[in-house]
Amino acid sequence: MFMFEKAVVGSRRYWIWLLCLLVIIGAGFLCYLRQLEYGLGITGLSRDVTWGLCIAQSTFLAGVAASAVMVVLPYYLHDYRAFGRITILGQFLAIAAVTMCMLFIFVDLGQPSRVINVLLYPTPGSIMFWDLISLGGYLLLNAVIALVTLGAERRDAAPPGWIKPVIFISIPWAMGMCTVTAFLYSGLPGRSFWLTAILAPRFLASAFSSGPALLILLCLAMRRLAKFDPGRDAIRRLGLIVTYAMLINVFFFLMEVFTAFYSRIPEHMEHFRYLFAGLEGRASLVPWMWTSLALAAVSLVLLVAPRYRNEEKVLAVACGTVFLSLWIDKGLGLIVGGFIPSPLGAVTEYAPTLPELAISLAIWAVGLLMLTVFYRIALAVRESLAAARQEV
Amino acid sequence: MTIHRRGFLCTLALAANSSAQAPAKRWAMVIDPQKCLKDKGCTKCIEACHKTHNVPALAEARHQVKWIWKEPFGHAFPSEQGEHVREELKHQPVLVFCNHCDEPPCVRVCPTQATWKRADGIVMMDWHRCIGCRYCIAGCPYGSRSFNWVDPRPHIRQINTDFPTRAKGVVEKCTFCEERLAQGQPPACVEACPEKALVFGDLRDPQSEARKLLRARFSIRRKPELGTKPEIYYLV
Image (cartoon, rainbow over the protein chains, first blue to last red):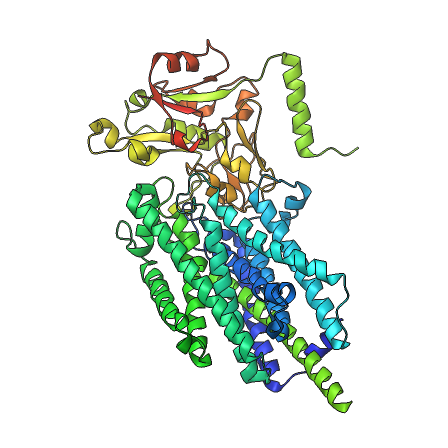
């Protein structure tokens, strides 16, 4: 298939890595088969906490996927050349992230065989309908863009003109996808934790910090493992984007805390209380949430001072803390915290079960597998291009 | 010609409506907690409903399916609870179930129209269309919906063959006994209550008992500030 011949050439280390991922995927798949047979009762979910790890991962990954615009926009709209080498990596990250995002929704369905009903009975009034449309569309857009631009690069030619408008469409599409994902939550009358207009802006801010932070880490890893140079300027500029986005994200979070605790409206305070102090003696998420806050604080110290940020090793640590902090915040606390306490005041805790963790891990492994193969292809295209140029 | 299940049901409903030549009704329930509390341990309405509708009895609390049940007053009416609320209310449970809202958020969020509001106000479910995404559960501000986390069939005490059982992986809830209404019978819970604490009726009919009660006595509804317009009224 198109350029996939390049993915089957690799070192021993490459194949061992792929094999490890396949083993994790296989184990997760077996757990999923068991879930299909037994039902979602195999998870830690309950009457009161009906969405958990999977939907939270999906929400987090929709943000990571949308963050590709943070390289696409400067490169294509502002002609920021330094991003030339990494734009394709950003787009591949978006493809992998949005695929994982859709898989996480799929494995969480009680009746996955009926998922086609969403298209058979389109319901424009439902945000879930728009979420699936925007995710699917974004996957398609990025797949087309990545294939066409990398294909042109392989032929050492400029990409065809028609791809430009497609790329431009992908920019507002990404913003829209992130917003629609926030709207899934922020329009529900009985869920005070999510019923806030700042949720969509918060989703954008956390997306544009966690996504580029992951991209920086991937670029630095590629430099170590594959002698790929993303360029010093590109990394620094991405670091700056992470810094601003993370500052805005923390600011938005503090605005939420102020509104809840100064108004002292019980329904708005209770969820924060559960997450950061515990309710009725139940506090399993408290250590996680404080870890997230501490990591966010550390990341800001490291990011805000240019002296630290421009040091690549420090930047790597900062990006790691940003990613972990936001993964806990969005991939754990935000979704589960919205269900505790329940509309009937019940404080039912949630903890994922082993099969649930195995399924989630497997989906992450699918994403990593896609990333590895895609990045291998991108590298091979560039290596053969460099070799061809040397011969000339 | 192919006819889908939904289309078939709609045709049936239309036929029933046109033959009767009656304007659509607006079903609602009026509950008198004072009467309900006369026998404190009474669960006759719950038993009748769950038996009629093949609701499973699951031992594990987190997997339980409930159509109608009792909640402490403060949980059902969080904004009405306070230190000085009448003692008998403070510690007494009230009956809760689907409010069959006029503006149901569950219907708004469902991505497949597997749950919808009928002309007579009943919020219905199509258990064959539901994909089990549980968005309706997140949307319901009353906790009235249940998900089948496991196969419910082995947990049904005695299967009522006149009513469908559900598969695992779908959401279910109270349907105001629409199958009984179609045969001119009142909902099972209403029929089972020895104190007549539950009054079911048509709000569009000024002479209905429900309307008379609402005219004569003060009533409250659960979380009316959310704009969902719940149609279960509690007499105070």
